Image (cartoon, one colour):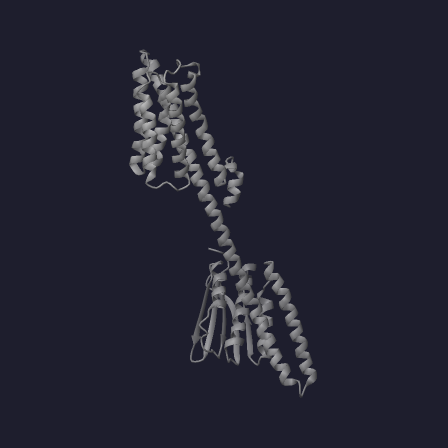
Length: 385
């Protein structure tokens, strides 16, 4: 989303910290150039500067100090030295001002106000920004030869606007760099979160997918070994079934890698009944489902797969019931077996199932029932809240 908003913005060119820093430099250059030119040749407005040899270096030094402060503040590298840079900007602006009887040097208020707005925080930032502007306006009024009241008001208003916009532009450009850096950090963080989420998804799907398949292969392998000596044909059938399960696992592994795995309750329930039956677990299925959205149906399919896998790996059950039907405003699935094993201390599969359920505003609960029973209960609304 952030990338899309950035790409559609007119300021997309400033979306990287490096570009934003260059833009900050470019914002400073015209202001520094104006001050230098006003000292050098008066720009056709002011008389030749009697102190040009001194004022031009002061103008360059003032611009360099302000640019240094702006860059350090913008990139988050300005510690206590920002106050020293602010004081340097004030000194470089005020000292030449005392020698000038015209307005050419008053534009240094751009730098003094901006430096104050960058160096301080809280209400001091407002004071440090506004006081230089007020002082500059007083200076303009003192120097200006005009006496007509309406013209004075117009001129002072115009001058105030120019001074405030110039200083505000420097502060805003500095903030643009800060935002660009924050945006870059957010992008990196989002990319990292997306990568971790994808790893969790892949790990969860691999656990849920291959767990059942490997358990089935193990059971079929044990059964084939037991039948080999007395019933070789039956053993061969079991070996063939192992090959089919392995081939199916390979296809599902590819689906997991491409996030294209299709899971449904009907398929998983049928597989669970057949697999548990081959392991000697009598399984009863009671299906009273209402019409389900595809994502809820998929959740119930994952639940059946996880519960049957856990039963095969950790249980000594001989009976199992799978019951699904309406529950409250949604659907309720209960899977109960009579052979709860010792807790493994690992909740990876159930934790992954709970994560899937939370995405649909559903709930997963797993608990012992009676002395040896174990129940997995999954509930989900038919429509997201």
